[in-house]
Length: 428
Image 1 (cartoon, rainbow, N blue to C red):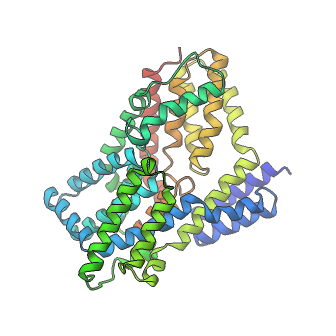
Image 2: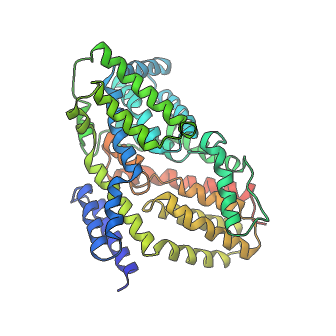
Image 3: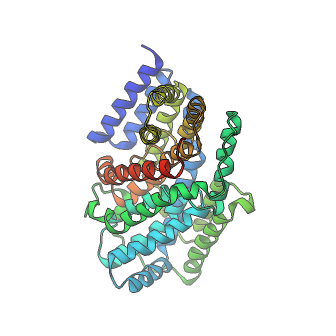
């Protein structure tokens, strides 16, 4: 039995365990990681390195930063202001948060950070309206993930250069990606998802948390207001952390350093006690994220992604309909990025898409943006982005509830993406 086969068997068993839910998700994640190492599918040093992954550090840090911000009265005042403007309407509340989230996602190329900034205020709005956050936090997470870098602002302004780099590396410079091409391709997806999250997503969300995580239970606590100094420190630290993340390219400070500094400041200035800071970290979700990295790493080391990619390229060459080719190049990376890091899937599939187009003498611009769009739409499972484990912790979701809420937007997103992009950027 080859390592590839063993790896796939472990992946399938892990997913079954997640869905059945008999074992805690964190335990399942750690067991699968150990199995990958013991069977030689994953290098031990690589596996242990995932505990210090920068995305993981950002996620844990943002748990603490968000908890510190949520401890202040400022977050409640902001939420009250939003609710007053919305006049108590959940749809109007969602409109405000969705628009702000979509704009913030253009400047901060990290869904976990955007979610960590927006979730505390939305939770406070829900508390005031008497609505369980489980109704709205997954829609918020989707808006933190899929629209990132859609507009040519902030990190989005560099997308065309990155895609042209792939074209140059694969010696297919007959075609180039323009500055606004990624926006032209992805803007309809962003608009659709925003409308879906405002009007429809809460209807598919559970009325009550499916699982009672520590973070869900902590909102029931009734603690006294902070002293004036700690109160001011709490929102100043949060605002400075947010500004530092927005201007991170200019500051040239690693994002995980900014997040960790914000978390430490919350404790140093007394906004949170050490015990409260540690309690704010959802460790099962942290272990789940490490396990997800291990699964993606094992699939990469055993060559599973490249095998699937090569099969995909061969299959695409047999198709004559451009929309079918586009569908194949969207759906396969989209599904793989639910269990592998989206950047890894992108690195594998964009060159394969370029080479396939080169063999067909086709324009690769639409196809590679389609692959990029698929890789950035990883919201169905906690495997591809730490924003989803954060969302699971604060919303009280399990894997089943995530999949249930994801199916409709994933299906329509695929139709919108393929239909629009293959029309605007035809192959021939």
